[in-house]
Image 1 (tube, rainbow, N blue to C red):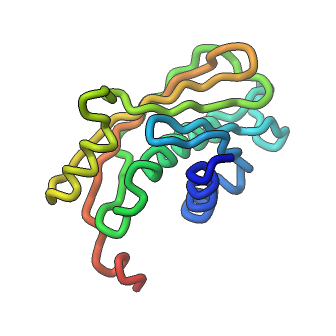
Image 2 (cartoon, one colour):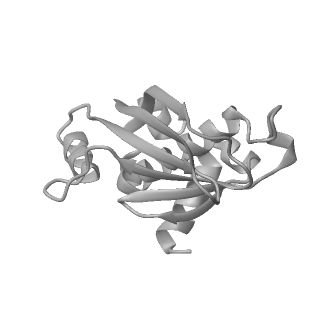
Length: 162
């Protein structure tokens, strides 16, 4: 596990208790992508034997949060990421462990999304971004999620810990 992966794993499980509840495994986190796994567990299977949609959505949302944290974790005292829209598509019934791979939708070599967002935050602007997530079991892609994120100024009371 890389240092960034370990750091993001610790911070995400502390900030998002549901990630710890589901025992999500942080496999790899970089500024370009986050890969997280939901281990197969009977207690969060649905009526057809696959993982419950709530568990899969939490996996996907946590992967997007990990990607944001990797890119701007040091700015969370200034801005708070807020999911403003999400779309989830089901392609096949997942079986066993499910992996989520999150990447910025509009990332490019000229101006990586993380850099653009960081610059906009530092300039006092309110950036937004879209992150796509591919959900896979061991055999195939089982779903896709897109989450639109906005960034709001962190209230002063949250900055000071009150």
